[in-house]
Length: 338
Image (cartoon, rainbow, N blue to C red):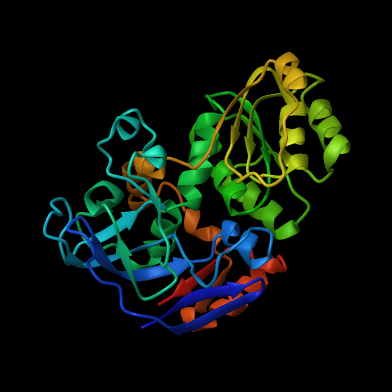
């Protein structure tokens, strides 16, 4: 088959690879209904994250099971499934504690920007649907695999509660999903930091109440102004840079929680300033598998529409253009049809 391979910074190719095979009795093979490009894929694409040779790309996926290993019990060929970008057994102590993204057998999904993919630990990772979903819900189910689950975790980690005032740092797909999640969790006021009209419009559609276009100290000052000098009750940090983390900490009120889900690049925290800020922090790789059943049900009931975050759709053969469009901020998130 053909699949997406990153050969180096700026060099993505859709090229021949071996078909995925059952390698362990706990594996499944799925035929993807759709896949997509993640903002985290841009780090190695931009040369900001080291790679050790050609890498199979893609970790967001949904589709139909075509084969399973001998030990797989909870999914079977012919079922439509959604899986997490973090592979987990869903039975270890960390999984049972609610953090399958720290599973003792954790792997990170790869090779999903392709027509077929191998999913390890299928029983713990995949959630089967009772029936085949309508085609128009495929983008939203695909979003649940990572970006929706990650935004949801950001809101959960920020302790979003009914009536809360929260800030979202980052207007990428995860930040926008964080807005959606905060709205679903009952936040009364949702302030998003964004400079891009299309992203601002989608944020407002998902439930944002205020837009802050300023950055750095000016952005913090604007949020403080909007909150009467108090700061926000919770912050969703969805970028992962030094500046975004600083903004998150500085706009939080004492006692606030910061949910940080942007993969850190060059972030350093000052212990003393964090100590006196009296803010809490929870983040890391999102435990998407924990939230998947709830998110899938919300999608199937059409209570949320995370699929709108895909503002570009391409055939998977044009994946290189999708990377360019996201790198150049011409697209928020690119869906790839297979």
